[in-house]
Image 1 (cartoon, rainbow, N blue to C red):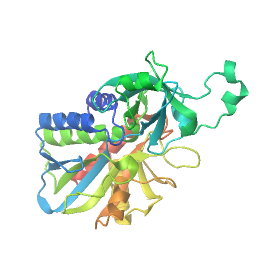
Image 2 (tube, one colour):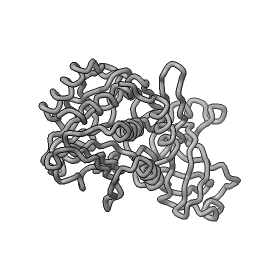
Image 3 (tube, helix red, strand yellow):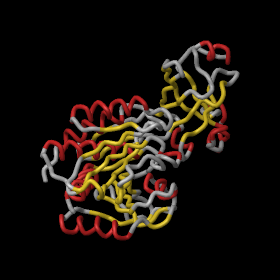
Image 4 (cartoon, rainbow, N blue to C red):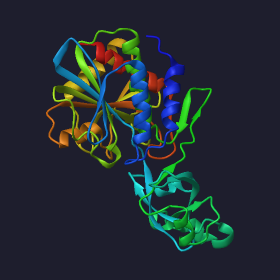
Length: 346
C-alpha cells in the first residue's frame, strides 16, 4: 500500500513539539482532539483524561482496541535552592546522565513558562576537576539553572515558580535525509503519529472493518497505570502500540516492526502473536520478535488490572530508549502497515 510519508511526519513533528510529561498532557490531548475533529472520528474522554476514538465495524460485540501513550519522561521541581537553582524529581525511569546538559522548560501552575538547563551541581572541570567527572549522576546531584537573573530562593519564588511545577525536556527533533528520526520522546509519540495516520487512512479510504476498533490514547503509561481502567468493555483483543528496543543482545531493529513475545510482566498472548506474525509473513512486512527484560506497557497494565483480554505488544524499533532516541521511517511504515492489515483482517 502507498502511505503518505509527509503526513506521517507532519503528525510526528507536531506531536513531538508539544511537551507532555506524565501528569501534564492536556495540551497534547487537545491537539489529538483537534485532529480527530478534522477526521470526523467520534471519541470520548475518560475521567482520567485518556481519549478513546472509535471506528465502527461490522461486528460490534467482538471489539479490538489499540493503545499508545502521549505521556513522556520529565521531572518536577522538588525544591528551590538558596542559590536560585531548582532541585528536580524524575517522572518515569531514565538514567540521569541522559539529561545532563539538556535544555528544558519549567511551567508554573499558573501557566508561566521559563527556560533553563539541567546541569550537575559541579558542572565545570575548570572549577571541580576530577570531582566533576566522577560525581555520581543521581537526582540529588542535578539541578535546573534558570535563564533568569536570579540568585536566591526569594527571587525564584517571585517569578511564580514553586515545588511541583513540571520540567519538560527539549525534544531536539531531527528528520534526516536518510530516513532517520532523532528525538526525545519517540517513546511513545512515534506510535501516536502512526495511529493517527492509520485512522486517517481507514477513514479516507472508506475501509470496512470486520470489528469495531477503538484507539485508546493513554496518558499515564510511564508511571504504570495508563490503560488500567476504562478500556471499552467489549474489547477482546488489545494491542499496545509502543516500541521495540534495539540494542545489545536484542533481536529488535530500527528498520522493522518489533513484536514482543515477553516483557517483565510475562508472556503476551500466543494466539495474538501468531496472528500478527502471520500477517507480516503473508504481506511481506519486515518484522522482528523480541523479549524485553525491563519493560512494561499499557497492555501489561490492563492485564494486571484484571481485564479479560488477549494482549499483544508491537512498535517501531526505538534505539537508546528513554534517552535521546532514534528510529527510521522503515520501522514506522512497517508498524503502520501491520496495524492497518490487522484492522482489516477478520
